[in-house]
Image (cartoon, rainbow, N blue to C red):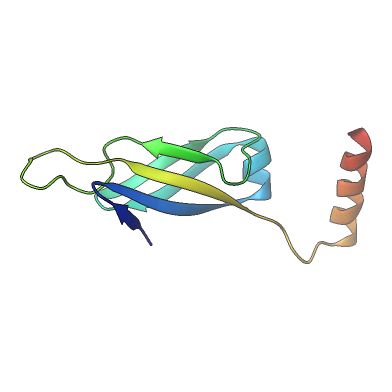
Amino acid sequence: KFKRGGKNLYIIVELDLYTAILGGDKTIDTLNGKVKLKIKPETQNNTKVKVKGKGFPVYKKADEYGDLYITYHIKMPTNLTSKEKELFNELSKLR
């Protein structure tokens, strides 16, 4: 789930299209518990964010941790209904 680079950890988090566009909250697991992320509205695919102090423990340094770097991957909806396709068409016309 995590990739390690020294004291830092790296993870990919999937977001649904609606959370990426509208923003919201997402809770993820870290090595030392859960973290609630605030997703900004209009988040783009491959956006990277840093969560300070949620990485790997630093060797021989008590209470010191690296950082957790998150890359958001936006998951596109599949199997759209005709109503959903119609709504997306309406949205595209507004652009």
